[in-house]
Image 1 (tube, rainbow, N blue to C red):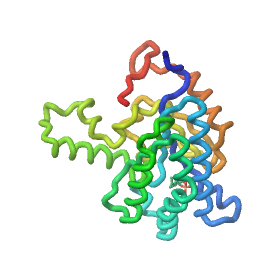
Image 2: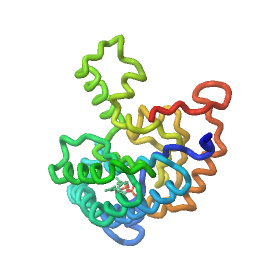
Image 3: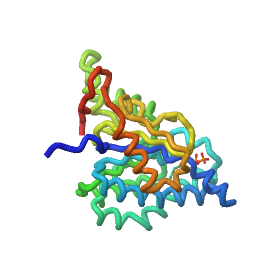
Image 4: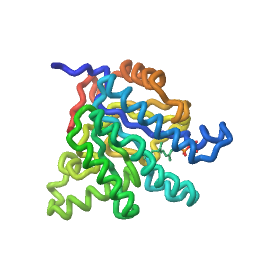
Length: 241
Ligand code: FPP
């Protein structure tokens, strides 16, 4: 059956605005991140119901280590909170979790949490949630090049297709729709390689407030775009995954 091309197969999101959401309520920033996790869990279902097969979110960037120590440890601790609250439900609801990012520089506890989340959901097929954590688009390109060299690829064997196989998002097609909440209009080192032909939607909505209505507005915007992938006529995306 032909897929409905007006619906993106893969949506990627920069979940920005948690801190401001908390500040508006005179709460510490951590509460904004906590509300952000709840918003994410609600959105997974909303995406799946609308026929979106891949959802990828920016949860912690390579640069977020520069934040105050208590905020960094709060975000790390939130992984355990989210796991206890939601992992069993996601596993049961058909969500496959893939964690993308540098693992060597996070704690053993976090590595175990990621391994458990991936292992307990790996047979699920309803929707793939990629959580980019300790991730940066530049880091991804560098690690892909290193892997390609370690695998013995010669310079003349390196091209877009061969390098793509070593990128951290090789399990998914490129994102069709890239959303950033929170009012800033920049990419912030997210999916630099993969978003080459994504459609971008920027919204002022703060991430914890992003719900079905905001998703539908972004999808309506996407449905009205003409994707040409560098050509002159509307084209069908070439998907890797
Ligand atoms: C940006 O808002 C948000 C982040 C740096 C973190 C996003 C993380 C989550 C929603 C939690 C995800 C966690 C798991 C375990 C999946 P900001 O702090 O920059 O907000 P501001 O721009 O208003 O200050």
